[in-house]
Length: 197
Image (cartoon, rainbow, N blue to C red; front, side, top):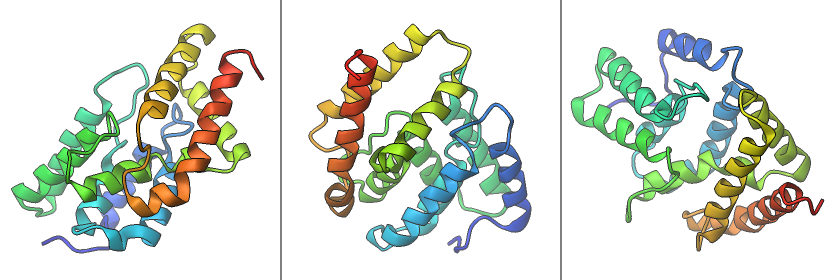
């Protein structure tokens, strides 16, 4: 069974290089480190922390905002790298499955570890308003290749999808801590996008 801490030095350097690519503005090491910080606080809630740790590091390892298969390609990369350092086929499949789920931020029913990962990935939604606004600005910079109208429509669809959920955060402790803040930020952004200020 793989052990924490993850990743080993050589693999860490390869991942740091990927997360430092110049076209990234939000999906950077800061995003990974923020997830790891929250994971340190809430990791006791999961059954296989080593799988979540690896999935955090790999889930955005490949990120090209002009493509729709980033999670699939990141999952393939995780399988390649993890098998290369001796992780079992089952462990590699589990990490790849977790990464695939981040595409829609939806865990399979009863998969509490995956639910925690999805919640950690969405932790920025519950940030203080200024940090949330900075996140939106950074996402806009990553999508500089699309028009304001296209970007706004995409954000509206994302916000509508999240607000329609019964719970944005599936983990009870994170629902209690973050749900209200996230909904406030999303509603505020939706008003701005609708011209309501």
